[in-house]
Length: 158
Image 1 (cartoon, one colour):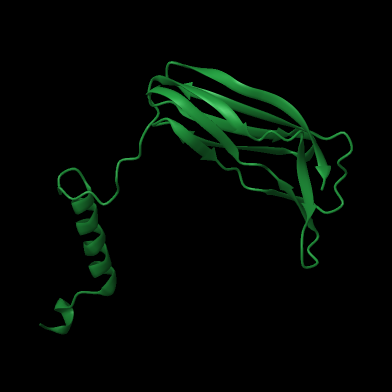
Image 2 (tube, one colour):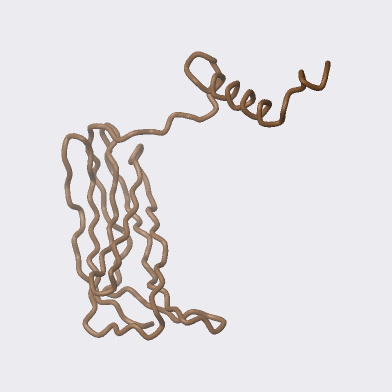
């Protein structure tokens, strides 16, 4: 092979990417990524186990940080009946702190289900007097939705 016939590193990289795309596509017969379950028509009967507290706690950061953490409790539900494949949606909104967080999970079977939401940081000196959080839990599908919990709780330093 002469100097003009050599294959460059970028050409090899492009060739490897193309081979990977062919293998992962419908023609290659090899599935590199599994199917992600999707929302469907359906319903579920659920009971909220947690959160039950009347407050959401804000705790001080450690090690000299200048932040506090809004500790958002995980949603824990008991599913007693499920038809189809609905999802449960957990939303926490604290307008005074400009916080709107949510998470959802597909409901596939009966039993206990946990839907976590990460803690949220705020400045250490943020005033909390009169601050409220709105917690909403919905069971949703393409066929419609049902609100399972809609409550307002106080946000305060713990």
